[in-house]
Image 1 (tube, helix red, strand yellow):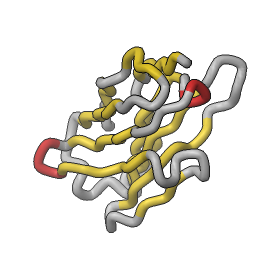
Image 2: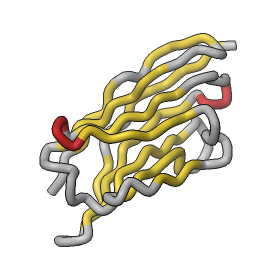
Image 3: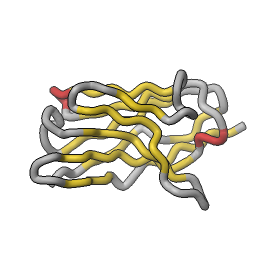
Image 4: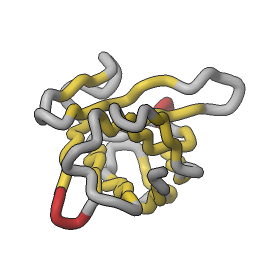
Amino acid sequence: QVLLVESGGGLVQAGGSLRLSCTASRSIFSIESMGWYRQAPGKQRELVAAMSSGDKTNYADSAKGRFTISRDNAKNTVYLQMNSLKPEDTAVYHCNAVTAWPPGDYWGKGTLVTVSS
């Protein structure tokens, strides 16, 4: 089992930046994939960015050029650096971890990001 705890959300003005952190309860070195998803009120949860164990990254079109996902294996932590934030980025951001063996799909409780115009 992997427990995930997010932090770093908050209220920021449009054009500002935030860095989200997701700390896992175990080593992330061998976790197949870790990523960030978000869910805005009344909308479905959507992928923001993900990183494989081989450091291959995948970004939503809305995140490309503004957000960067990174990891610190020594700290069991994945980050999401968000720049040039827009009001439409307002959402609860959830951390996700996918393990290959035993197979698992784990979610954090989320951290709220609010971008004011």
